[in-house]
Length: 249
Image 1 (spheres, rainbow, N blue to C red):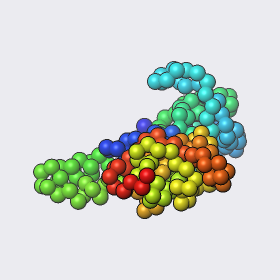
Image 2: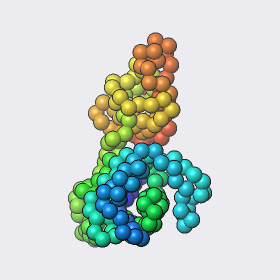
Image 3: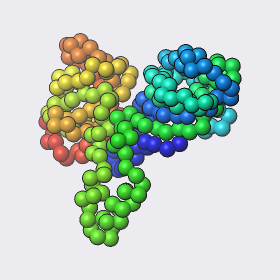
Image 4: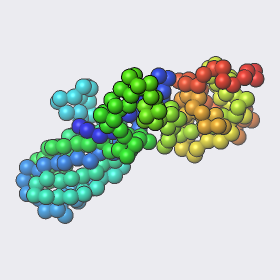
């Protein structure tokens, strides 16, 4: 497989699980084992949009138990003879080679995956990626010429990991307590996205857009949490330096 592979450095690695478990997009080439009409192929492919059940392939690094995944989009881009070019947007952990195999079974001719390219991983797209050659050249210039500008230009700030994820913006007066492990109450929240889910994860930012870390959402009813003085979120991973914001507690 080729394509997008996010790599985190330093404390940003603490937020990577959110990206690893985010939606992925692939472009793959599927080879059919027999002739099929294009209309029949597209109709069969659409049967796999939505919730599907998969058992990992024999050659995989996980236990072969049936698991549920969601295919958000599946588009047949091109058909040439028995080769099918498809674009698939799906949950993390969806096996594309198993998807191709199952489409072949439904068509009654069999199929397997020939090529695979990941074009999106969470907030990161192929257009945002860099080649190993370009990175190698930038590292060489930094180590041997003392020129760090090119290398810094290739590295995204940790805040880029928050794009597309549930977000809570904390008040400046609450930040110091958060980085010391305190829970976040409704009174310490400036704003939040509408996709917060109880028991789910969220990214916590300062009002200036700095990444504080990740948190588990405990409740989503802000008014009720405020009146009952109960925490809205509990910090899981902390990225922000503790001394950046003064203590107000």
